[in-house]
Each structure stands twice: as C-alpha cells, then as structure tokens.
Length: 498
Image 1 (cartoon, helix red, strand yellow):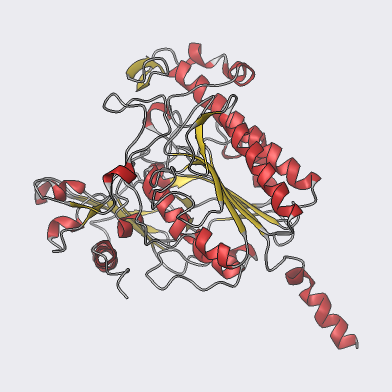
Image 2 (cartoon, rainbow, N blue to C red):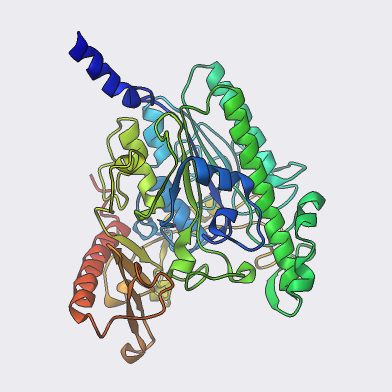
C-alpha cells in the first residue's frame, strides 16, 4: 500500500493536467520581440504580458516561421513551412488540402473557433480556405488586418461593423464562445489573432495619453506608412506614429488581461493552456530599438524573433525562462501530442515541445529553417490558379487601399512542375544549435552573400564567421539544400497524392 501511495503521489503532477486541456492561442500582428515591458522596452507598457512572463513559461528564443504575416499564419495552423503550400508572402492563401491544428483538435472532441485576422484566404462562406473549411466550428474573422471599429464576418456572413477597440471586441466574443463550450461540457480550442499593432495605427484616448511625450521626443525622424484618412501612403513624424502604435499594443495587452481574468473567474484558468506570440518582427515604420539585426521582411533575427509566452498553471507550476529555440511550426505537433492525436501523414517542419513544458528539453532536437521564396521565378510563365479566383476575392474592408480597393484578394498558383535552380533562391537561413547561416542571393552569383553567426556570443548578428569556419558553412548549406528539396516536393503537390 505504501508503494502504491508513493506511485500515485509521483503521478499527481501529471494527472493534474487534463488529457484535454482548454487551449487558447493568441498572436499579435507585427509585434516584435523587443516591444514588451519584460524585455526592457523604454516606452511600451505591457503589464499583462509582463505578468505572463513572470508567472508562466517565457520563451526567450521564439521565432515566427517567416518574416511576414500570411506565411507565418500558415505555419501556425499546419506545422509546416508556408512554401510547402504556396503561401509565399502576404496575400497568398494556403491550399484546401492542408490539415490544420483545428482539424486535429476537432477529432479530439474540441469545440474550435477563430477570432480576428485570418489572412490565409478569404473568410466568406463558400471559400475553400475559410476558417470553417480549415476545421473551425465558428469564426468572427477578417480577411486581413483592422483598426478601431473593425468590419468582421461571422461564420462567413456579410461583414458587419463592430464599434470599439478591436482587441477587446475579439476577446469579448472569444469569452462568449468559451462560456458556451463550458456550458456544453466541451473542451475548447480558440485562436485569437489580433489586428494590432499593424499599421495604420489608431488608439483610444486613454491609451494614447500614456505616450503623449513621444511626439516631441522623436519629432525629427520621419516614417512612411498608411493614412487612416485616405488609405494611401503618407510620411509622418515617427514620434506621432509610435504614440499610436504603442497605444494599440497596450490596448491588446489589456484585452489579454480581460481574458485571463475571465478564465480565473469561471474556474478555467488552471487547466487552460494560454499562448501568445507575434507573427513577425517589428515593421520598419514602428521600429525604435533594435537589439537584433533587421526588421519585418528580413531573415535576420530582428525580422523573425518574436515574444513567446505560455501559461498553464496545472502543468507549468513554477515560473521558468527557457532559451530553447522554438517556432510557430511547433504548435501543431505539440498540441497533437498533448491531446493524443496522430500527426498528419505528410512532412511536418515543427517539433513536439511537450518536454519543454515540463522542463525536460535543454536544446532543440532539429534545426530551424527560414525561407522567403523568390516569386520572380514565375515571371513570364503562364501559371494556373490553384483556387477559383472568385473564391479568392475578399469581402472585409480595411483602411489601407490596394489598387484603389478597400478589400483584399488572395492567390495561390500551381507550380509549373519542373524544379529549376531559380526555385532555390530567396533570402533563407538555418539555425542549428546556436549557429545561424544566412544566405542572400544577388542578381549575379558574385553579389550573393553567405553569413555565419554564433547567436550565443553574437545575438545581434554583427560579425560573420564565414571565413573562419568554412566547414561549418558547408555543412549548414548542405542541410539547407536538402530541406529545400523536401519543401519543393511539397510545393509541386507531392504531399497530396494518395
């Protein structure tokens, strides 16, 4: 009996975390690593994220899978690199055959909902890539990004204007979904993708007032972004822009706080996995401090390193900070493992992080790969649409005009089939251990650049070690090439054949 009691006592920490924890995955839009209070930003106020960092698992080396939004979102949903499904850049959709984390968790009995920015296809009814087609039972979503008073589509219906601060609107709807799931006795899975702090910026008076000193401090610097009034590009003082941007971040932070309080009040916080990250590094118009090299759109760490936080009191009982490198592609395999579901039978780029939750992972077992595919490879080639263009026409308006339109259309193209050397081009990087290789192609081979960095001693990527360590460079190049070949096989449709 004593032995049995001891065995049960040892198992208690594992049994206290349910086999079906509730799961909420949140993501900010263009929210870079440095733009949090807990990372020492000189101005931005994020008390909720700071509290999550102090009480949960703080992922110091968390990466977006791509330096821009649509591709990262595709990786977040599928556990795969976005080039595998032709999501090359913002405005490129994923493909209908993709299997998402919502598909996986639906099979485990979860009630699944999406709130906010979608941007991997249209959200309207009938779209083969809307949240419903991608496994979500309900959604309140936008094709792209949004500001105050957003136009959102509920379950594919015509867009409706929701008055108020957008992050609070999303969280309020998510809380209602959570309450319904609890009432029905269902475990819930919710994705909340905020529209903040993507430009053009706007904020509530109470949030703007927190940063009233910035216009005078940074009046000399000018940045180019979208005008909320005209939807066209405009040049403005960086201080004014930062005031509005940080107001959006603070409002988003407050909305996350409201969600955490609701989980606590309803008795759900203990066994709910709550996650937050950004979708890429800080955009150039909003970048003020740069502890890392680069900005959004670049494969240097400034373009891909983002905040990463996990709270799950039932399993993560003591606060921890980890330097293990992780990425948005890890979400699907991790959640599949947590809920006992098999992985989709196709190449998965992410890895299971469940040992990290328990403090048993000291290093990443596989490399991280980044690749911004050079779509100029398709210039002059007649390409077949992967999805009917009518189904790719967006409906939810936004402030930023594109070609005179306030809505966004998407595209996805069938690869011509023959892989050429041009298919391997585009800025790319591999991180293996603490070494990172960055490759940038020039128009001529002599203008191409290969850089090797030791991120352990040089996190700002200032000093290339290419000449000092040619063998390591060659080894990483070989790994990168082999991975690219796998990705291109997926891109040409190899994963969907039975």
